[in-house]
Image (tube, rainbow, N blue to C red; front, side, top):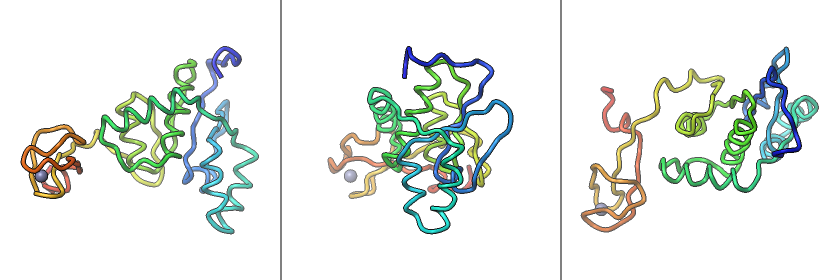
Amino acid sequence: MRGGSRRDLDTKIKVLDSTALFIGFTEGGKTELVTCREVLEEVKYGGGQLRAAAIRGGGLVKILEPSHDYVERVRESALKAGEHDLSETDIKLLALALQLLDEGADVSIVTSDYSIQNLAEIMGLKVEPILHKGIKRVIKWTTYCEICGWRGEAQPGTPCPRCGARLKRKPSKEVSEKS
Ligand SMILES: [Zn+2]
């Protein structure tokens, strides 16, 4: 997309996830609504009602594909952040937003998904949460071992210092409700 498309600086772009598409998210003014093909397909094959919403949304929402480079960049960031709950579709959405941002667009992601929100914040992308209130801060994570129960300061994905299994992580809020 780079090079070919010059973007109007007044135009806001909103990248929609499947929930946004399903609820028929619209916005007036000079806002361009975009999504990627996988999202439309997720909604389309989700059942009769979803299909109807997709067809309604399909006319208003532009389908764009992120380039492979951006998909890889998001995949790497997800890995580093230990954000394992992202689907390929989620990664593509984030990649699309990142690419549009790099092209100079005023872009935000419209989503109800916490993992998308969290990684978007880490990557410096704007998020417009829908349905849920949105995260007020980036989630703090605890690294732990599923096998032996070790817990402590370590990167997820590295070997457990006690048993050598691959470390995982979970929100520390789950561990202590006090925060
Ligand atoms: Zn262990």
